[in-house]
Image 1 (cartoon, helix red, strand yellow):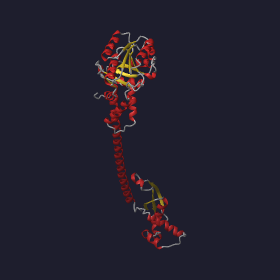
Image 2: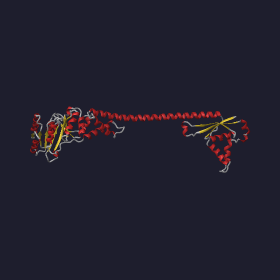
Image 3: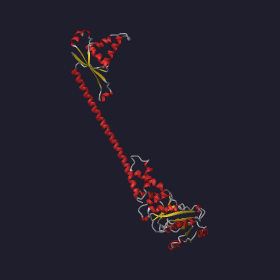
Image 4: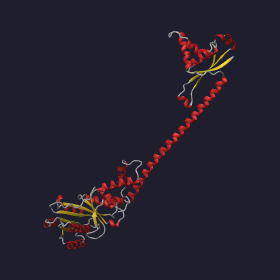
Length: 416
């Protein structure tokens, strides 16, 4: 018995090949579908392998009837049957098989060897594919790690700035507000210097332009100074009065309602004598009305009020009554606070005076503290404009307008 294997695209084509070589009496012993593996699956299709057998005696008897397969192609090319004949269709099918370059395995040993070679090639291709995929995944992981490293670096910069602002006693909620407002404009490659510049500009904008005493009016301007005891209201008034009279040639007068402290009246009287300006002492809103008439020829009247506890509503109402003797269009109010006061107390003080009137902020005693976070905090909390700051007891020195850039630098740990 002769046994051979035939490989073709379909089972029908494989059977035709078997019959073409072994004769019509061929017996199909086995049919197996061959699936391509590895890279081969992208350019090879599924094929069919059949195992065919024929009895030697039958094949000898029919030998003269078996066409010479090697001459099959030549015979097909020489024959020119009609396009619609059945013979032409059969020959066209055989010709299609030959063009497809199907491999006919001559014997079982050769078929096994070729199959082993094919499996070996496919295994190598599969290994190559695995290696390429591994290298690609490694590259992707490295790129991912690099991106995460850059993001982590940016976050580290923001954490560093966050810590610095909190160390400068800026309230955590305001710190987060600043970080959130600038974070959207940052990229993963933004440097620490650029992030600092963004935060610095944001702080400067939030502090804003200082609100100073405006004398561009034909009417007498009344400036009231309010605030708790011991923050330096009287000294601050003396400094402003000196600056206005000596530097700006302003016609200045002084009023004090701080009759609870004799020393305060004497202190302000001393300054008035040095400057050569009048000083009126009042005890009630009615006396304030009278002083207003007597000082109508002056450009600027600075009014010192008694230090009041922010917890004493009756005393605060007394200040409100004196303020209301002057129309809003002719007066300005400055709340004087010490930069050394605890933030919780500053919150309570500022809120209690907010119930009386609108005000601008003056911070004193900057020479007695290393942090200026409270200045920023109270400004943001109240929305009240910042105006002057003072340091030391020297009159008329040791006073200046709020410097937003200087404050920003101090909050970020820079030199003032």
